[in-house]
Image 1 (tube, rainbow, N blue to C red):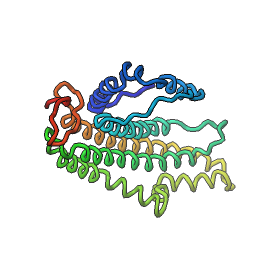
Image 2 (image 1 turned 90 degrees about the vertical axis):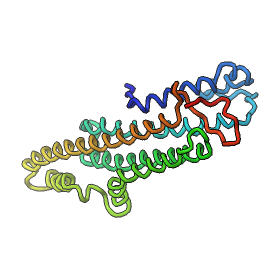
Image 3 (image 1 turned 45 degrees about the vertical axis):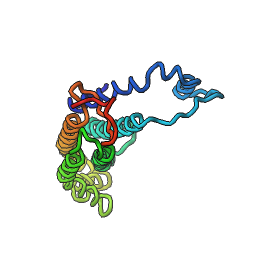
Image 4 (image 1 turned 180 degrees about the vertical axis):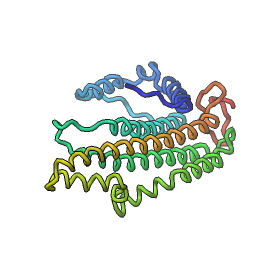
Length: 264
């Protein structure tokens, strides 16, 4: 089931999709010998045709669009992954899967730290790329300052989380300082190997439920932070890079005439 993006993200995506329909038009496909056959072969896993389409140099607009579109896709993927992990933590692996549920919960926590870091880094890289693409643009002359302030605000908001992730990677697992997981690890050993297995299994089951519930709460809080970051980011980008008709404004140098770009 496809999730809905927050409104500012959907607005920016709609502008990219509209632009893509202009750049990848039917006329352009038909004007490129063998291109359709090559695309179909790639999608269907068939051998490529002998006569491949000739490679043509991308225009400045096409290069810019490529950067904006690919960067957006990377951010969207990272954001979706955080939501996937929120869904996965709600489930416990069936016994038939032969997956230890404590290690499963640890895996989700470890994965979440890495994926949130990737999400933050992709946002930062995207903003850096936009600042570079539009640095000489006369219509959005303050883009560099705006983006710099936005990057600083995002980094400030995520410093604590990134610090935890760095400690987890370079020093010790986050679970080593997580009271729920430490208790769960101990009870798991007792439930499997001690002489009080029956009693320990009850405590172990209760401890797992507590740890799972607390993990859900943490993921929900962190996902709320991720949502606030992506909403704030694209709210700013929409005001800077889209015209009144919600169409993408391409960067131009001060020496160029603005013929094809929209007006603010």
